[in-house]
Image (cartoon, rainbow over all chains, first blue to last red; front, side, top):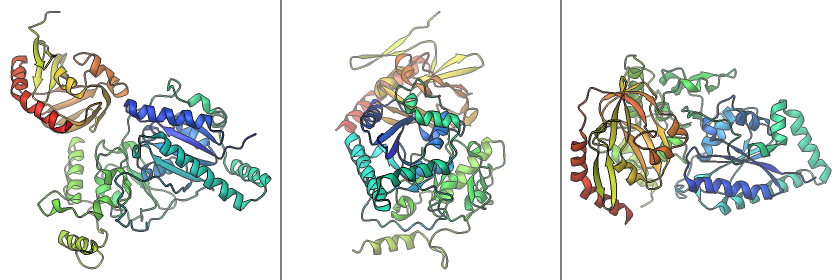
Amino acid sequence: MATKTLTVVVSQSPSKNPAKRHLEEELVAACMLDDTVDVAVVPHLYNLDSNHTGTLFLQGLRGHLVVLSWMYPRASHWLLDRTGIKGHQGETMLEEEDEDEDIEIPEPQGVGGVELPPRNLYCLDLGVDSDPAVFLEEIARIVEELRSVAAAAAPSDETVQTVELMDWISGSPKPEQLEKYLDPMSVLTGGEDIEPVKRRWYPVIDYERCTNCMECIDFCLFGVYGVDTLDRILVEEQDNCKKGCPACSRVCPENAIVFPQHKEPAVAGALGDVGALKIDLSKLFGNITGLDAAVSERDVELLRDGREAVGASVGMPKRQPDQDSTQRDEIDDLFDGLDAMDL
Amino acid sequence: MPMTDNLVFMMGEYEALVPGDRRYAENHLWLKDDGDALKVGLTSYAVRLLQDVFFLDWTIDSDTEVRGRQEIGEIESSKAVSSLFAPCDGHVLEFNDAPLEDPSAINTSGYDEGWLYRFRTQATLLSPQDYLEVLNDGWEDTQRMIKGQLN
C-alpha cells in the first residue's frame, strides 16, 4: 500500500468566477492522479462554522496538510489553528504578488501557537497565480521535503509507518470524522454533497505576532474577545463581531488581527507589515489615521446597536510599536523611512 | 399586469430596458414597491456594464440604517470588481439570499428574481423618465471611462 505523504485540502472560493473554479478543479484533478497525496475539497474555510461537516472532516485529518485557499497564508493558518486544526507553519516557496523583497519583515515577537501536534500546515494562497502548475510544483517540493526529513529522522522504511501510527494514537478522531477521512471522495468536486455555508465575519488572531497585550479586548465593545485557560487572548464569540468592522485590527500594535475578507491587504493578512512599514504620505495631507478610523468604525457599530457612541473615551491603545520612550509622529516615521532607503 | 410605459436606453446596439413600474436612483438601482417596503436591484444598464456577475457580498448586516452613498457591499463580475453603495438615506431591511449563493439571477432576471435587498426610505426617487435623462447625460462620460480602463 502506498503511503500518502500528505493531504491536500482545496478550500473553494465563495465566488462563481470561472477562472477561480477552473484553477480549483485543475488542482483537484491533478492531485487525484498523484498517488503521493490525498485530496479533499471544502467550502471557503472562513465561512465554515465549528459544526460544519467540513470542519469535522478537517479536524479528523492526521498528518501533514497543504491547504490551498483564497486567503493570505497567515489568515488561513491561524483560522485553522483557532478551529483546532493545528500544526507547525510549513515554509512555502510561493511568493505573494505584492511581496516586496527589499522590505525586511521584522522577526515576529508573538506568543506563538500552543499544543501543536508534530505535523506541518502549509497554507498556500490561490490568489498568487492562475497557473495550476505553480501550485503543483510547490506541492511536489513539499512532498520531497517531508520525505527527506522523514528519511533523515528514520532511515528504515518500517519506522516511517511507526511515526504515522503514533499520529493516530495521539489524536482521537470521532467515527464520522474517520469515515470521511477514509472516504475523501465524498467531499470531492461537484459540490452537491457539500453542506451549504452562510457568509461570516470575524477576526483571526495571528499568535506568531500577538503579544497578548489585550488592546483588542479593551477596544472592542461587542464582546468578541475573551481569554482562554492560559490567559491567552482568544476570539471567543466570533459571531458577535459586526459585519464589515475591522476596528480592532487597526488598534492592534502588532498587526496581529486579520480580517481575511477585508479589501485592505494590511487588514486581510498580507505578508509583512504593509501598513506600518510603508511611508504613508497621505497622513501628512490630513488623511484619517488608523486609530481615528477604528474609533469612527466602532462608533458607527455602537449607534447601529442603539448604543451611545464613545469616541476616543474608551479602550484607547496604551502602546503602539516603537513608542516606548518618546512620542513619535508621522514625521519621525517619514524620516526613518527615508533613512532606511539609503539614498 | 398593468405596465406603465417601459423605456429603453440604447447603449450602442444594446437596448437597456427601464421598466415603467418602478422608480430609480442615480447609482443605477431600481426600487419597486413591495408591500410595506421597496425591493432594490441593479438596472439593466448597470448589469450590461458589469456583464456576468460572479460574486456578491454585503459589508453590513441586514436591518441597518444607511446613509445615501454609504458603501454597503461589493460585487465581482467578468468586467469589474466594484463597491456597492446605498441609493439614498434609508433602512436596509433584509438581503435576498439567493444571489449570495448564486448571483447568476442578477444577469438572467435582474428586474425580478435578481433583486438585492428590501429597503425603506423617505427620499425622493427618480421616475423612469428622470433616470433615462441621467443615462443620457452620463453616457459620453461612461464610454470614455470604460475605454480609458481598457487601454
